[in-house]
Image (tube, rainbow, N blue to C red):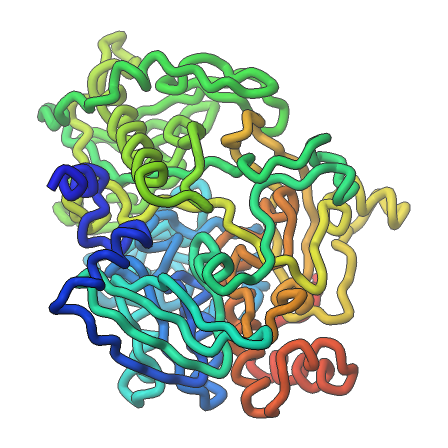
Length: 570
């Protein structure tokens, strides 16, 4: 009973975030001894953006697919974690794949069809519902959920796709470098044995890798191992980017929505991250280390009122940073306030890892991370400086309905760094940073591109951005250039029928900073799903498609036919 209460306090009871050992004990009860056998051509573990893209691609080519997802929402980063798409400046003209362009279009169409937009907003071809600073389609998590469900609906209706929610893998049967089946349990303790020809790991933390014995890397490699300029001198598997429990708030001027004082508030109020170079001061403040210089910087936080929008300032107003709803886009009365997502450096959790740990250790860090986010909200409500000199914005209201949870925090922590397969090819910092590519190409003007890959299966771009880490590193932030996704990074060095389908591909701790965000994950997933179905149709292993010149060309032609960009064109 004590354990159950602790899980409930952590927000993990009945969410699919129970530890493997707890799930296994649950399934050993007398009423849950039976294991249901289910088979498909392709099993996808994880239900995030990469998984959804993989499922659509594989079903499109005639494969039957099963998705397992540990929470009750598909969508990963953009839904269960609450983070609107982080995208590059060319995204409207070069989205990477036709299916991702359709996803973005459907987000806008959803608001046009179902929300009371103003005439001005409705007529905007590039409607941005939240007008947040980080994305051209800032929107509510539930809208992404609805759109992704709609995109998958034809495959569900046809019987080619099955989605097992609140279900996670706990063990696997592996013979001769082939995964034969995996055992999963759901939140009710039911067991499923899932058999497939090919398995795609599109989970947030690389869940299939340890239980299948697939070789993987976690944390930071050393400079001696990779030759990367920003790699540390010594490898450290425990040095992982911070994760974050995001939450959404609005502001009801003149009202008091102050939450109960969090249990760990005193700890977090006094906490100063022990980082190198040093952090700017207490974590609960409006100050942080500016990523590109690491100099101390303070940003304003000024919510809107009932009668006035959030005022503009010389610096980015944090209220506008990840704003999900700009009430001025909607007719009077539709929204009393903007809605803003809080995913800041101030609620990045740096005290420990949840990946590659289990049981009480994992639960402890999840609980403390939730306490950090709730403490940040309480600080904003009671102590944050206001323009009038008074402390605290009491009108800030935790929007539990937006996140779909009883505590108001995201269903799953925002994971920046996963286990990464030891792949046939590993992407390095040298392949994609501006400084390194300038050295290699002797080019200082015009559009510089990353190292081209003969086995390209997609494109992407994101500034190389590593958040403060559990190993004590401050931001690592450096300019990158538009890059390709090499097929070799999706294929493990040994396991024959496993494909990486999201940020668990063959990157390093450093290069992962470019490949971890929404549109790139989608492109990785689409390549993985296409590869799985094509390998099944050709009756060959995924590895042969990469290493046989004719097979590789045929596969790349298939990707092009289905709207996947393989190289950048400006």
